[in-house]
Amino acid sequence: MKYRFLDLGMQPIANNFLADIPEKDCEFKFHLTVSYDDETALVSLDDFVPPELMFNENYVYHSSMSKTMRDHFLSAANHLKSMLNPERVLEIGSNDGVFIKNFDPATTTAVEPCGNFADLTNEIGYQTYCDFWTKDIVEKIVQTGKKDLIFSANCICHIQDLDDAFSAVEKVLSTGGAFVFEDPSLYRMIKRGSYDQLYDEHAHIFSVIALSNVLGRSNMEIFRVESLDVHGGSNRIFACRIGERPIDESVNYHISMEKEAGLDRLETYVNFGKQIETSKKQLTNLLKELKRKGSKIISYGATSKSTTVFNYCGINGSTIDYIVDTTPSKQNKFSPGVHIPVIAPEDTTIADADYAFLGAWNFESEISEKESEFLKRGRFITHVPFVRIIEPEE
Ligand code: JHZ
Image (cartoon, rainbow, N blue to C red; front, side, top):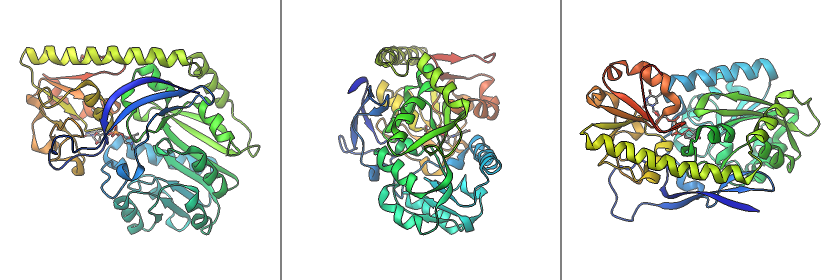
């Protein structure tokens, strides 16, 4: 049975940055509520947004946009090569090719529903099917051979029908092959109060407990788990067909840790819901107080996460002057729902702002290093793990 524990109000498509401010009520919005399923322990949105509205040829999120992520995927590729030595590789949701470009195009295939990115990786020699990952595409993929490594980053949690997705993986995986995927961790989201991991694209936020339950229905099991720092805390899950590989002790370690944190109990989520309501009050009060004192506040990183925070907390252009972001396809546009202008760093001097809300709090160290000039006078504000102005000694 599913129990609703969080209501983040009406939300737009998190990555739908707008060229113009739309007429009143013309922007697509949906009611973002989140539930815990006590049969599987899976945490999911109650209402899924049609995938074509989110993932299409206008998709703006480029994985290569930060050095942190470029380094991360290079080291992930090297790690998986030396650990699994795969001959044939498939990536599900290859985005701008940041991961696959570390593999040989002759033996690497990709599936990517966003036409702009599928074109890009096809152009650099990687056969990329422009499609969603469903069992319908399996027949075509199998013709290119079964895969020893199926990799996916920040994509499996976007897939609404997990049984369909996992059974499709099971059909394409070679005997003894590994299905490796990384997504934001529910454990870290609960520990850090980072409710902004919840938006239209994230149909689910995974615990290892829930994934074990759901993968089992497709004859698969988890044989290893690695914790990652990226995206505010993620898990890299290694799965295989049941019985094909020895189970590493990291699996039980994570499951025990999650049980200790109560991820298999409704009460934990109910408490999280209350904590988020408090976080909203604290953030809006802090910003109101700073504005009352005449401070200039901007935001750093036009993220999906900041779309959730701004729309949930009702923060708009009267509080935040603009958002600065390095992604060209987000620049000179307006943020979804609350319509704050997005500006390129080279078109503005953030040094004259007093505060910058960290929409990309997951890149705090990369950003702080880059913005040492701003930090001589200005301060970052964050809501993770609790609402505060970040002082220089932190
Ligand atoms: P970032 C994305 O979420 C979307 P988002 C997606 N759905 C997903 O699953 C998660 O990632 C995991 C900018 N930036 O990565 C670049 C600067 O401007 O936190 C990006 O627009 N200057 C696929 O959108 C944004 O911040 C900088 O110095 O929440 C970061 O977005 C740096 C470092 C980044 O993802």
